[in-house]
Image (cartoon, rainbow, N blue to C red):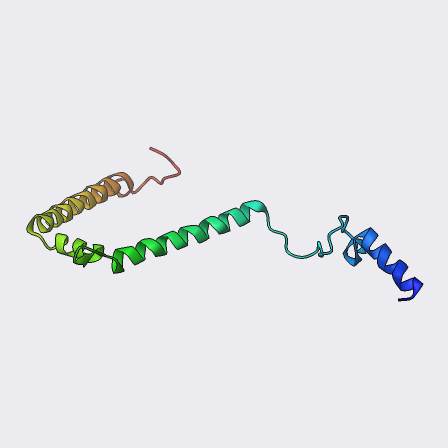
Length: 124
């Protein structure tokens, strides 16, 4: 190795390398500072979403594929939903939801269509 190459190598190591000589780079990091830089909040949300997705996949796997007794949880839920009390509950919930929809539609009509001369901006 000749003397000029050795001194160049020492100066590169001392100054932080070629990345430190570019505009904007002030640390001794050899990586470029002009690339993508993510905020820690973005990375935290990304990791949190990844763990949530993994957790959802585990729960779905257990729900559909792991037998509890002779059946999976999904099969147990289907068998429970087929019972007479569950069917009666379904009918009652359907009736209650229809009554709620009719009530909300009546309130909406009374408030916003009952007085065609006013608008939401003009007030009562």
